Image (cartoon, rainbow, N blue to C red; front, side):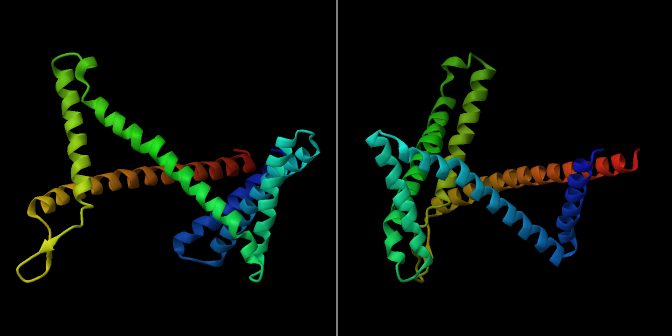
Amino acid sequence: MSDIEIISGAIGFLFTLMIFSYLIGDNALFRIAVYIFIGVSSGYAATVIVYYVLIPKFGLLRTNDFSQLLLTIIPLLFGATLLAKFSPRISWIGNLAMALLVGVGAAAAIGGALLGTIIPQFQASIDVFDVSSAGVGLDTASRLLEGGVMLVGTVFTLASFHFSAGRAADGTPKRNSIIEGAAWVGRIFIAITFGVLFAGVYMASLTAMIERLSSIINFIRQLIGI
């Protein structure tokens, strides 16, 4: 093994043990590892922003294209006004840039959710009931069964978020019995979904832990020459 491989392997081994120390409780070693991870991540992000965003933008200031120059100066000015947020006295200067950031971010999030999630899911739910391409017999029945389960799950899950209620004889809020039954079934679908998501997260974490343990074992074996 080269010196670089030994040093990088030793650092990885040390930080892995520091992270695993959380298994015995929150301690200084774990917090140091987390602080270093956050610091390195922030430094890397700042470096990427400087070299791949700011420096290319400043380079565009030498262009003779007025429209390109305008599109370069305006973002730089808005970015400079955000620095005013460091001082409470002049923080209002950055309000416009912050409002634009929040507004554009919200619009992008809503547009992404609508075009990338809601509409495709809506279309996929409709396509499930399209039996023209499913053939005959068991294929059609299987497709209709799948579509029926999806439709029932969607309707009952939405019913679990229906919070309108009337008043019982004693004045307490009471939902319609049909809505209450549908909401109960919907909570079952939600529980199953959360269970599947948790299992996926658990498997991903388990895979990462196995990879780390395997890396440590391989490093020790190479270090002692086995």
